[in-house]
View: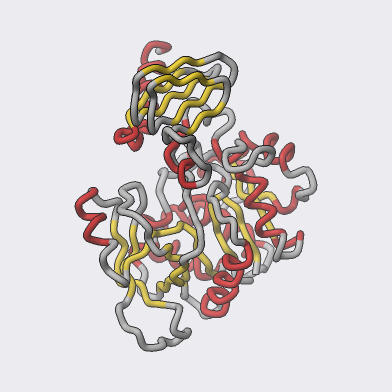
Length: 349
């Protein structure tokens, strides 16, 4: 089995700490001195041989990857000409291996997830590998939900308690559910067969190729090209998630429910599930001086910050800018940054 760590995201909901020039996967968010990418790499390297761990990254972030993972050979870098979301990235990965006549089971995993229990993760992945060796079979890890989360997609699995083709703990997937409303999420987590979509998939390159050719033939034709012709065509591919491109359309799709600690680390409040807060429920990073302030996240890289009389706020200041956001609105940070960037582009034009 091989692992491919996808390190091409932009992490805009962690703005202004996560920026286009250095997004969140390259930041030390869950550990003091190691980036999310470095922790993910170490996680896989603890159980897989050095030659079996790869990183897929867009060309513009190549210098950061080489700096943070200096021991990673160049031949284990899968380089995207440009960021085009997970479907093009995974298609490029499959093409990369197939051109080398490699069809071992691969794990495609995000670079920015918090998973402290490496042993339990690898136990689940090895179980998934057994099933994914079969042609056309795709396995994902389904996270047992702990709260009514509206920022994740959900998986509905087969309700049967009987052992299926691949054993009791590998369940058939019935449906994918888009990010729900709060009310819908509350309903979903009451069901025993509902899991969060981890975005971790286990499959063979030939399986990816088969489904890409079936459901995204125009995109897959891109990977029949070589060199600059491939790079030029890749830059024009639509930004498409792998879930939408093929996963939601599959029949031979299975999930392994896992209950160990996992977090997508997608927003500022996700840090509250990893670090302890102070007696007032605050999480403070930097020279922060709160007064009559509760349940807030406050981060400052350099400046001293005085905060008085607020509750449930996210306040972040860096050289890039200043974010002030109510916790209930943090899912909109991504949209606000997109609007800001669009406005800046219009002004420059």
